[in-house]
Length: 381
Image (cartoon, rainbow, N blue to C red; front, side, top):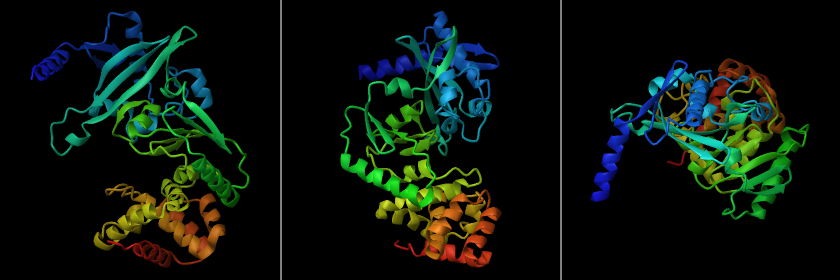
């Protein structure tokens, strides 16, 4: 009982005694735990604020990020896509005002943790009140402060194992499975032979964790709601929270040939059909979700899904919808048809229908009808 009263008192005290740092046009509320009288700590907070004021939602040569990571990665801030999504940094702060929780010295660097939380008390939105706790590192580069991803600081003492083109990186507590690695190597080899024979043989890093928060830490989050998932593929890397060396869905993302005109829904459909399907139960359950929706909800149909009007309905709707396209194409045209789908223009619904008409030599309405039939066969509920 005494501990509860003390913690309540401290929470109130922290709220009442926060300070505010101003950098450019962005004010930051700062926890009383942070010593803002320390000149270096103030520099780190100002650096973070300046970064947020420099359109970090865009990919460009941002002056507040370190040169090494900007040279190594196109999308160098590993948290960018999850943190901002479709918002600008200024919009993000309007809905989720940032609050600096801590700035801690770690060797020659500092870590900074920033809470993004809304002011809502509405029960309809309270479940997403906390968007993220963002964590970045700061250090001096050519006598100026710059930001850095958390990943190199977290994984510096992790183990590494190579298998084919996959470089596995994992904490010492993880029991690495050679059988899973062999299975993964074979899957990648066959995928390349079928759909990307000109692949340059470049290896990629596969970071293995066993929880979404540990995976999120590799993407600069102490906690995240936005963008939370159990696997991601980006910048020549795969992250997983599944504690497994075999992740075919993400292997597909990593190894398909580049195509700027391939839509996200077809990209995810291919990863689902060629990768997730390795686990038949998982695949059938996912397809059944869409099958059930198509039977019971008239607003969910080919046009609403492929016009990107419907992204989530308790599951990622584009995944089974895109997989249904892949199933249909393969059933009629096999690998040749899938290769045409992989390398063709599916950038919007109209382009996709034109591509499918060309691949399948069928009219649009018949293609839409066959797609629906393909999905509806997964009727297990």
